[in-house]
Length: 95
Image 1 (tube, helix red, strand yellow):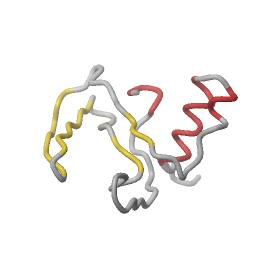
Image 2 (cartoon, rainbow, N blue to C red; image 1 turned 180 degrees about the vertical axis):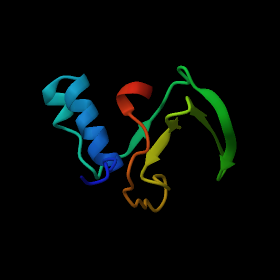
Image 3 (tube, helix red, strand yellow; image 1 turned 90 degrees about the horizontal axis):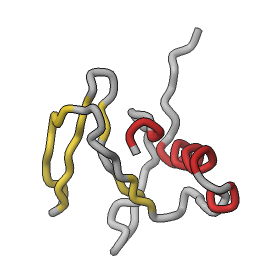
Image 4 (tube, one colour; image 1 turned 135 degrees about the horizontal axis):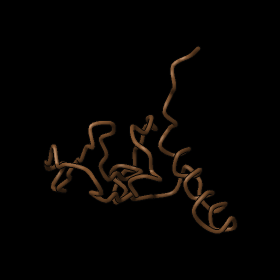
């Protein structure tokens, strides 16, 4: 049996939108769009906070998952760059 692989962030966003909003709205999303995903603290405990290029961020954990807000792409206001990576938490549980 193979190891479970987390979906790429853009695929997770698409799946989340397909499950949680109107289908015509979900179909508008594509991996070239600028997106900001915000998460809630929920039942998590603050484990880390920092500053990345002048923007504050926080990460929470419940012992099983660790989550934080993220943005696609980086440098959206100048020269956008992005390398899609696996999502390490459930959007459904934390957005």
